[in-house]
Length: 193
Image 1: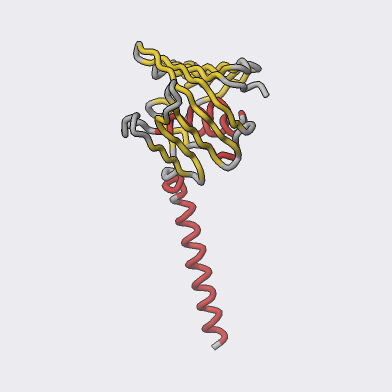
Image 2: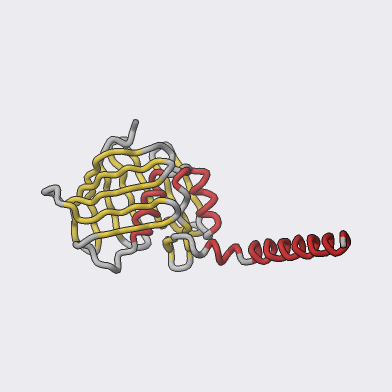
């Protein structure tokens, strides 16, 4: 009887090891369920966990953007810390245009103004490239075949030797330029603290 119990326990342990082995073998499938954004046509950047933020942010920001020959202006209230990120987008009159959230590994976005085709993961990826820790960004970018160069005044992201993203932080503004996709935006706020 004791030998039969030991065989059953060994069988369960063996089954448990097999389950763990196959779970690890399909870890890339699990990773693919995490939110991501393509920084290039073939570079998938998985969003970093909120704990990797450089320092908490809780402030109003003025956003000016240039894309496809047009200029756009928007205001936002951004709250981001180690627990997550929430962003409320407002027009120049203070009317709510949308709300974005990144918490517990999930992205949510609601808006009556912006099209459903807008992927909020791209907004969060740009935000992380501006405000998350160099070490975490460098590792995540390396995994998708890109490299990060950090300076006292900003960051640059390269695909091989080609500059694709450039971020300049003056303390009063952050300018994000996506050379590959052809857009630029500037965030104005108190980023020096």
